[in-house]
Image 1 (cartoon, rainbow over the protein chains, first blue to last red):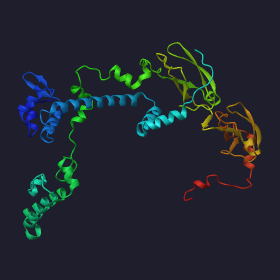
Image 2 (image 1 turned 180 degrees about the horizontal axis):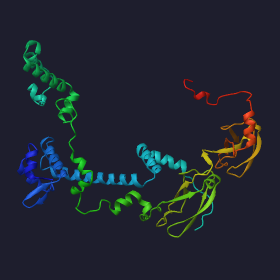
Image 3 (image 1 turned 120 degrees about the vertical axis):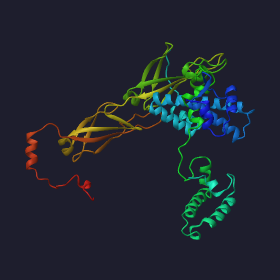
Image 4 (image 1 turned 60 degrees about the vertical axis):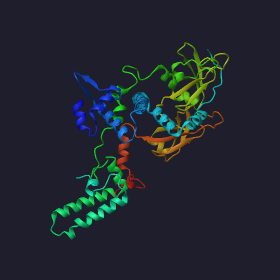
Length: 128
Length: 303
């Protein structure tokens, strides 16, 4: 965790008043400590991203909220996918994971073909 | 090492031609052969050559511009990007809300639908319901009927057809979720898990088995009883058999089913010498083989 002074010194080309505006806009969620802000590693990376978006990719500050909001949604989904993958790795039997991987690779057509091959109606009386 | 752009005195967006021209001009001035004994010029020339080597190669120049390699062409430790944080736990800091759960009930229904007892939409066909059934090896080979009790108390008699393989799914039409407004009921999908057998192994339509035989049975031949999925069967062991000899019992594998012919049973003999026997030892000491042979001949070095 670093303070705003250290961050402004470390990151060349970063103006303190820009950073303060970004915090006020809630683009960067720095923590308040006494009279100062402190930044976690993710905040620092996000400041660098915003700076690169603005200075190198020419995304103006008017467009930035839209871009950041879309990015946040994208990463939210990627975190979920990762969570799901972690869980599958931990609890799904190896065979199921292999089947999933194969289907994901080969697409929906492979799933339909397999179902047609391995599933057949079972005749005979069904008791309820 | 200095920034190669500065070394050559060109702008970061200089064209390849600009770079070549700048290098030639400077190289002319600092070439060691034109400045004999001038150590400074030699040092400078080395820097110029390195800078030119880096910037005149579009691939390397791109890597340097993106910060992937340094001025000496060495890979630079990648700076952690926003993505490295945002995809992991710390990313929640910029998630939709401070305490919102990552997974909503809607998400789970979208993904797993019927598994979570999803009720079908009005007028829709009932949902398919998935079940798992574990069955013994012989029941799967020969076919069997097994009763499955469903979570709602219903029971289903599942007919496992002969020749069912591990991982196969059976579909019971109309035994899944209720259809609403006159639409058909969903199906029950039953994933079959087949337990392994103590000595039978499935190989498509065939069954394989390792069959222990005594020394006299192998050498002299015999008629012995062999287990098969359909019950014991007598089989003739021909004389002069050995460990590894494979014998086939035609039609004694997976029974005929669904238009497929019955498979075969393959028995691989394994000679068992058995408990110590004084007479056998006495015989072997006196025994002079008719054709002495070394069974490990093929394993010898160089062969």
